[in-house]
Image (cartoon, rainbow, N blue to C red; front, side):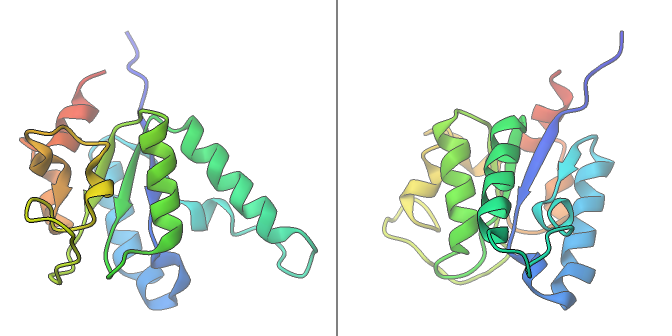
Length: 157
């Protein structure tokens, strides 16, 4: 029996910087693919957009919205204080549609409104009340941890 590869939308701000696009973004995509995910990375999926044509921004937004809706889950890079607003919108859509979400924050700064979470509490509304820590990663290396949520989700087909 052929197992369907799960599609993981990679919400991230790395594509805005050539240095981050060539380094951390490539590394993160490789790690996620090595775990068995089909990665939909919005910058590479929308790089054919001609910004000289009117309406390009609307088409990019609609393409990203469609990809988040059609993906099986969402992996979000939530660095910054606050994290990138586009990533937050994509994360909100995934939570609203009941998709599994996984968060990567290798930014050591605290950016929170509660004692319980390292970020705004709304980012954790798509995670379980107990055990949410298994869905939060503090490094790219930790993403492959077989005991954490992403590896378990990818194994459960």
